[in-house]
Image (cartoon, rainbow, N blue to C red; front, top):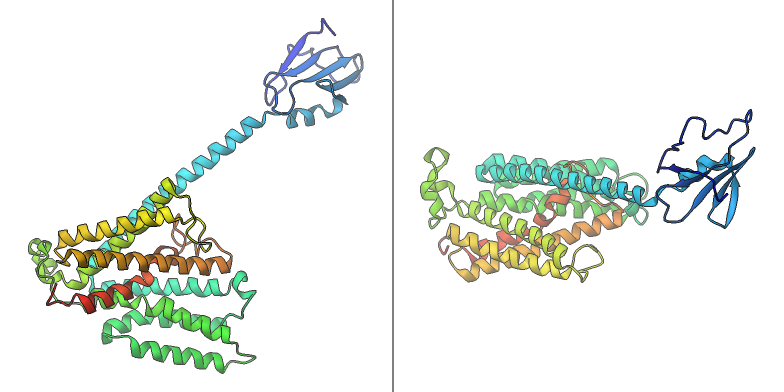
Length: 394
């Protein structure tokens, strides 16, 4: 064995020195040679295949031997693990990069579309909002019917859920048409409750509670954005941008208190989410709550500061609200509304046992995943502006 020549094996293929150097055919005797790996495995420092006459053995260092019939299996198992791990890391990195690009592209598309709809206002804003509400309500009732939630409660019948989709979508339209929503919400709740109580079988309180909350969460709360954007139609006279706004697009009268308040509120929410994400990635150490383990106190604090900063900056740009204290208070309100909405949807998804509410938007999940921060904020923003910032004061 001391004078035995060596043949090398690369990671995947056997490379003999010549065509007659390695033969396992039973018709001819095997030469005495040793095969080793050119790049040793992390688990095996030395693997030798010894051919001695007609008998072949596979030697693992000095610990034992196997017959040459298991050569292929041994070579496959002895491939360097580092290469496989590197390939997995490269594949995972490429997948993450693709997801990030997808999120950015679709995020920009959504932002531009939403910005145009908000600027348009009126029925364009209301109908677009109603479509989003319909999809969000559908996702909510699908979550309610998911295996994770139904394991502990009885969901509403499918026909009741479908009726709720439609009622939720009608709420923004009725708000725009009548100027208020209280009567429509009360009527809708009465209709749904009657349908559940008169159903066949054994009506359950869980059915009523989940359905009524769905009407409140997916229909009533979003309708406040219509009241804010379209209901507060007093001109924001201090807004300089209105003076240069094209007359064929409405001129200065187009820039109402509702439009400015909606833009400031939307921008503050986006800033809160963005800064919280970046702050959590950079400094996040302390979990905020078990409902959403990825959220941290450090990220939340950074998001809070970013939200207030954007609110104050935009209030200076639009000259609304004119008071610095009002701008700060408006930012604080938007921040807490966005966090509360985000955590509420996270709690629903956790109980449902899903990561995302849907797959409508590539890289972003469902509608509820994108608008969860806005659901409670609309009602808070409208109440704040209506109560503390009347048009004659701003």
